[in-house]
Image 1 (cartoon, rainbow, N blue to C red):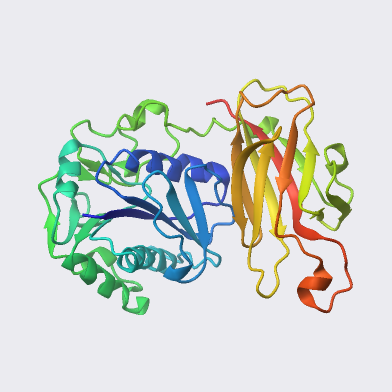
Image 2: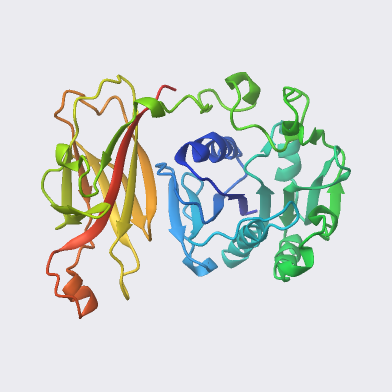
Length: 382
């Protein structure tokens, strides 16, 4: 059976992505019966730049990236945030939840597993349950609150259609009501051990089959079920010793810019031509650095995205599709950095145009791509 696993997501900062969804992604990539991984994002102001994550954006399923295989997960980003205003008023979650199953139907998946980003399938027993689930729509059981657990549910064949039909209903009927008691599951599985253990500070029981609402900022042994080396704690990113370069008028971008830049204006500086270079200062930290780029593309009419490639000392590091005001990030490996002041970042932007040619009314003949607001290098200690 072709299987999709997905979660809903929202993160205010890049460390939030790392401390929550990165843990989830590392865990679900270990499931040998999953063909595709999808993260549905409710308008986060920043997006991660992980090499194994492809980002798409737009309001419809047709805007989402097509399946590419389990080696590269997909993050689909809604540019507007619906959010939540109360415990039982969360239209952002409902839209993302419905989008996941709509994506599955659109691409012909036979089985859908919805596991929220703070929930994990811990044991081989629960994995066997999911692996051998072939019909219907089931939720696991939340012992703490005595209702079906929305954070972990599985649908297959006719159950996928039932799940899809349910999410086509207007959200108005759910506002102010306990969502868990309204979903028409065909089965609620009570034979597996699990709960919302993350609501306490106690360790996760070693005999648990699944867990929900885990803490994103705990010591590494708390996450005993994760593969070795996949814990990213709150202290991994050394924000206090970050190097920030501001490209606004009066900022410090003159310290790093090379070729391919216009003058600083307002709170940004345009990249010009088809590539822009940056000369990094000597870097004191001996490990990896997290690179963050706050950028806004020039878009108009049919030009609805700008491609951005990042190279370090001539070596390709990461590619992005910039669809609006975004903060994107990637890792600069300790093995690729010289640290002696000779490191060069190259930002490649092949979709540059003159505003005059793009709009038909502007008189600006500069070849522009994106406006860079801030670039930050953060030492990574984990």
